Image (cartoon, rainbow, N blue to C red; front, side):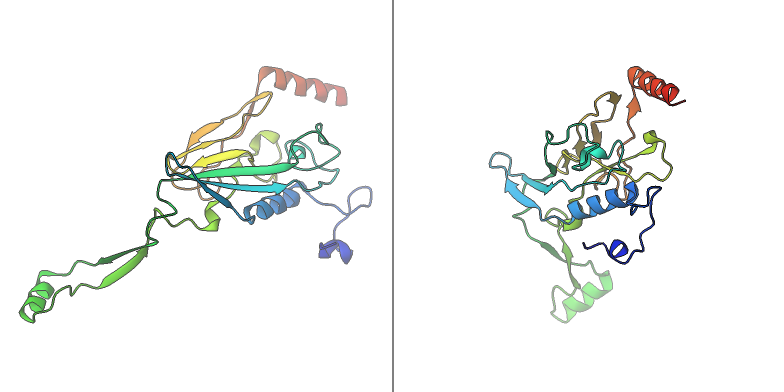
Length: 226
C-alpha cells in the first residue's frame, strides 16, 4: 500500500474504527491522477484540427462515497456496479495547425526615431532588439488538458470538492465546452470558455439544479429518515 498514513497508523479512523478516506481526498487524488495521464493526439484530416484524448481506468472507491462521486469509482455503492463503463475519459479540440506551426515567434522590437537615424548614419540596419516568444497557436502544455470541474454547491456539503466532469469535450478552436447532461436534474451541458478549461482559473461549470420530481423524491427520503 502506497498510503503512508495508513501504513504508519496515522490516518484518522471513522466511527467503525476503519481508516477514513474522505470524499475530498479521494476526488482530489482521482482528479490529479487523471490530469497526469499521457494525452493521445489525433489530427482530423478534414479540418486539420487536433483532437486530444485522455483515458484512465476507474479506481476502487471506499464504501463512504455518496452521490455524485460513486459513478466515478468502482464502488459497491455505485448502482451500476459491474455494468457501467470502467474508464474515465475527456477530450479537447485544438485549432487547425496547432501541432504543425512554428513553436516560437521571432520579431524585432520597434526602436525610436533617434535610434533608427543613428543606425542609418552608421550604415547599420535591423538595430532593434530581437525577441522570441511562444506561439500561442502551437503552445499547448500538459497543464492545458485537465478535466473540467463543476460547482458542487447543489449537494449541500460546504466542504465538498469540485466535481470533475468526465466524458466532456473542451473545444479550444470554438471557445466552447460540452459535458454530458445529468439524469434527473437540470444541468448546463454546453457553455463558452474564455481561454482555459472551466474550473482552473475560470468559472466552474454551474451546479446542477434538481427537477421538481427530484426535489420531491429527496423530501420523501428525508421524511422517511425522520
